[in-house]
Amino acid sequence: MAYQALDYYLLDDLLTDEERLIRDTVREFVTDNLMPVIETCNSEGRFPKELVKPAAELGLLGAPYPEKYGCANLGPIAYGLINQELERGDSGLRSFVSVQTSLVMYPIFAFGTEAQKDYWLPLLGSGEKIGCFGLTEPDFGSNPGGMLTRAEDKGSYYLLNGSKAWITNGTISDVAIVWAKLDGVIRGFIVETDRKGFSAPEIKNKFSLRASVTSDLVLEDVEVPKENIFPDVRGLKGPLSCLTQARYGIAWGATGAAMAVFDECLQYSKSRIQFDKPIASFQLVQNKLAWMATEITKSQFLVYRLGQLKAAGKLRPQHVSMAKRNNVGTALDIARVGRDILGANGISNEYQTFRHMANLESVNTYEGTFDIHTLIIGEDLTGIAAYA
Amino acid sequence: MNIYLLLKAVADSEATIRPTTDGKAVNLDGITWVLNPFDEFAVEEALKMRDAAGSGEVVAVSYGGEEVPKVLRNALAMGVDRGIHVKGAATFDALATARALANAVKGQSFDLILCGKSAIDLDNHGVGVMVAELLDLPSVSVVVKIEQKAGKLLCEREVEGGLVVVETPMPCVVCAQKGLNEPRYASLKGIMAAKKKPIDEVEGNAGESQVEVIEIQPKPQRQAGQILGQGVDAIPALIQKLREEAKVL
Image 1 (cartoon, rainbow over the protein chains, first blue to last red):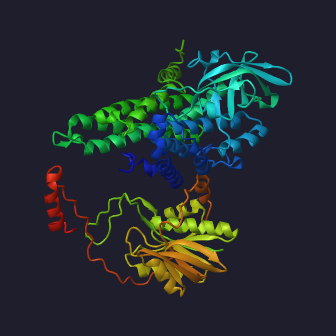
Image 2: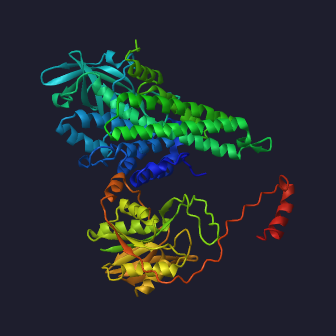
Image 3: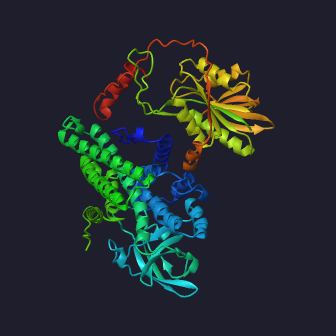
């Protein structure tokens, strides 16, 4: 059966015609292009790279940035809806788009020189070049400030050494945004991946995000030209401001994954017969469905309001933490309960709920774990940091 | 090359169609309006022909009420240059719709009028060819291929069991069938650009409707299936049912 998106509170009425058309277009793109291949990609552990060009032609890469870079200049709600629809298909393709848009194009757009912007943004927006973002290290995840990757000023160039871990798109990237300490201060560098000493081995054997490329980055005496540094941004606020952008999209995306799960479970429960009636007629199943629909509706309004705050320039990173924490955590809970509704069939890849559940385990962890976002909100409310 | 498109807003094919309480019209509450899928082939073909010609404009014309601008925006987002909303109440009478559209298009400068072969809501297959008659233009319907040749069009139209190749002078009306092309997605840039493209409004002149709706009935509920048995033994009973009840053998 065709996908039917839950809109219990007629949120559609609050969207503009353009926002609805963008949402519907991406929904159709996902239905036509991603859904036919996603289960195979997931079981083979393959990223559907053939979709990068069509996605770029549609305008999905760097959608919020200005027309002069070839981008669509979308507002926050339209951008959010793109993420929702992509992750309705799979967290992997949404992750690809998030990284390209929020973690690679955003820092170039926000911190880059005019030359860096003019060169890179059109190439990344058109999908001609793929990018990745190197902040996390094997021993520094929730505590990125402790990073060991170093940059040395060698007069005519910078010399980079270190390693990064859990990097989405790493192995297929043409360019990496690498954060490294220069004289003890975190700085951002644009590193072309064909530079000598750079390698990006893929992390295999994942249980989650199997249709997405995850890699280590290894930098051994990589020489980076002086003009490849972001000139003015210093300290953790550089990479963290990128994460705020990405987390914004993730909060919307996870909502889409939850909507996909709900749709599948609702349809299944109405057609699956046990004890001579559909399992949807049992109170325990209705309890699950009612809870799922309520949580999804709450998540939808949380991100809608988040989008309004972003458009109004009132958004704080802590607002994004609340939505990322709630919507991903809830989507994961919904997928676990949904898998239960599907019974034994939910174990098979004939159904997509298990795939979403496994993906959401990653999404709940990356870009600030559920617990770290709890502490960010806690600090914001109390003024007391409780990270260490 | 200037091309006029005749487009129709139709209920999304997933929508549940219910009659109004008086049984004379369709209840439009909660209907999602989309561009008639056959019209999408016309839009795609028009854009391709304009771009191949390197000049000219594509104008989308649609007759109806509030549902029209939304669907015209969709065509503008795909790349159509401007829209004309011919205002009036949508009707069951294909000839009235054709009159409203023909009156709106008459006197404009165009080389070609393209539309879908039919709309998926009423399935009249009428408006395109009626507009051609009203404008005294040649028309070709159910077209799966269009080729330009020395100022004329070669059109392949589907008929039972084969294709007919028709040559027609221009201007003319061509009604698109599935298979003519693969309609593009509206790009996100296209959607944003569509906001700035004009949609002119003109009052529709549809004349008197000659169709009266007596009654609209909901689709009958599907009957539950029957299990006649299992395996080879059940086949004679199945054949008997197919022959005597379903009357398909």
